[in-house]
Amino acid sequence: MNNFFKLNNGINIPSIGFGTWQTPDGETAINAIKAAIESGYRHIDAAAVYKNEVGVGEGIKGCGIPREELFVTSKLWNTERGYESTLKAFEQTLNDLQLDYLDLYLIHWPANAQQFSNWKDLNSETWRAMEKLQSEGKIRSIGTSNFLPHHLEALLEKATITPAVNQIEYHPGFTQDECVAFCKKNNIVVQGWSPLGRGEVLDNATLITIANKYNKSVAQICIRWALQNEILPLPKSITPHRIKENFEVFDFEISSDDMTTINQLKNIGESGLNPDTVTF
Image 1 (tube, rainbow, N blue to C red):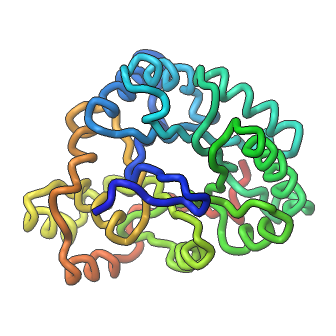
Image 2: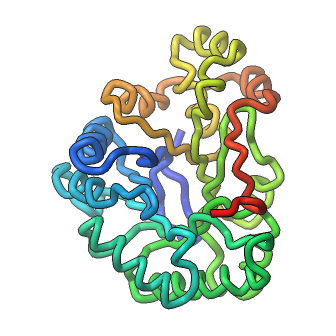
């Protein structure tokens, strides 16, 4: 299996990203980033709203790996939507991370019709700012997060750059097939947040049986399964041995029968966050 996905602008993105959601800032974030990079991760997934970009930046700075060998993502938070706000928020993120550029910048959540009558324009203006930042070389690729097909369709009406990535919740028991199909049709790489679901996924009897068969953990099965479905998973942990284990998924392959079994699992570990109804 290739250790990269190719984005629609020709850039390679490492096929597993290290997630930083809920990672406390300071030493915890610094040590988690260092442990991830020591374990082989070269793709770090951050976001302004995680409130830990200073620590993440320190970890990147102190990891001993040249910047150009790393792929760093961040996300624009919902309160900063719009053209000028996006430009300002991006500069803050760059400062916090102590970087000269980002490899990928995402709109964290779409503005939705329930909250905003002008949701289409709001998303378009945010996107226009991101296109400007990309044209200036401050971001190598731009994308979306939690956008459903109708949000993407509306964005594409005015966009001059097609999103390189759409990051959505994706794990056994919750696969958002319609959204994945739309993205693949439009050459948008799908990243999966919460690829291990919640405890519910890790305790699932079917997944435990499959994991035992391959002598792997359920977490490793979930990550490998995502990769074989051509989804880029973003596992997160602050425990060094789990960080390492989550990356050790390139030495086995799940059979097509077992893939089908996992694909057919339903309603496990879903967050319940619907991009059309969230109020934050």
